[in-house]
Image 1 (cartoon, rainbow, N blue to C red):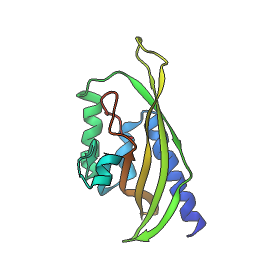
Image 2: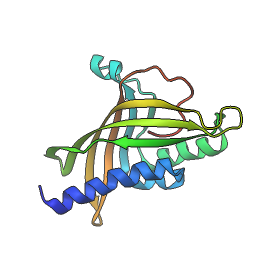
Image 3: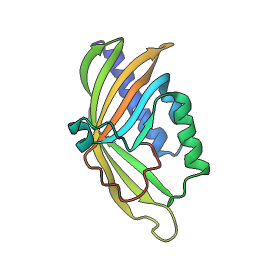
Image 4: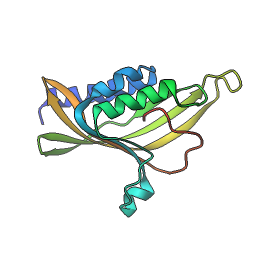
Length: 160
């Protein structure tokens, strides 16, 4: 695979994590194609072929709605994320997309006054991505986060 394409995909993965970690969620849907798939699914469900995800969106508009709900409707303790990503493993190309797998760990730090500064390992898992290029820009056509456990200590409101 062309080194330029690898570098652009590497940049997409890092910039995506920075967007979430910096709480610029309004920009998050722009990492996806108009018709896309974003899913957070427990490893157990994935292994058993059960389609029930913890978070789901099948269009950029649906992802924008998720951000609106995050900002205006959901009640949750204020926090921030910090992603740690593995080096991407390129799995090949199919249907005009580059398939990529990368491991992640997300730490969550509480920012409310009661628990200010408490940091915990929040989620560990693997991203399975299908990345396409639109107008010369790398974008997710599909991003599936398979979390190692279905056990979520609190409400999962912020995208992984």
